[in-house]
Length: 258
Image (cartoon, rainbow, N blue to C red; front, side, top):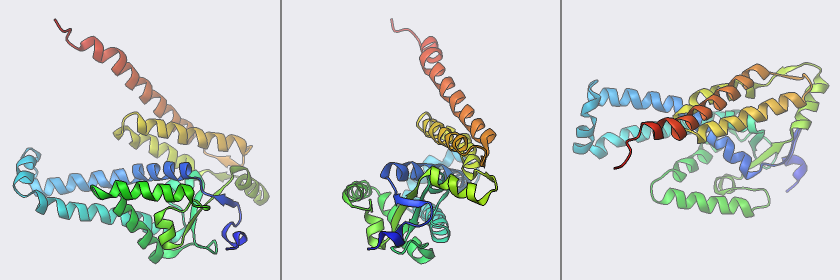
């Protein structure tokens, strides 16, 4: 395989697994909002607006009620990854981490192959066997020269990465400052990450910090510092509040054992 075809433009190296992991987690936060909306609407419909009756409904007809919901959630996941990977090779999470999915020629893989590739995400999420398959896939990716996991090898796709310095140099050559789209994503991420305490905000802290670093390195060629800074502040405030709550407030209000 000719690497000159695979690595094009500012994408000059194989995507590191840790970058891809952060990208997947970030995409999970993006998917969280539509998922919560679907859950609320679905539970509202099957309960007739009486959410207190849900336990009894699921106890009597658990499988019949869960299958339609699972299909809807799978549809959301497949649509999300198929659209973004098939159109640009980058989901919002991949974009912020500077990684991209391409074929052996370095081209966008298209919707058909993106859909097949996305089916593996459903497989990884299946109960019992899903996690085992994911571990095997991660091991394959760690030992593969191009860090291809199971879904990449099956679909003949590659995940390539870019260096921030090279991307900034391209903007410098264009001579026109550009809004760092990642800064908007970082702010949104920090707002919705409260649903996953601590871990979500730590990830947001890293993402916002990374965006601010990239903007600083660009010497004015990338904009959006205030957006990323707002996201960073939200993450810090949340983490401090969480620490105060568990270190001082909860212990102070807990009954003392006799």
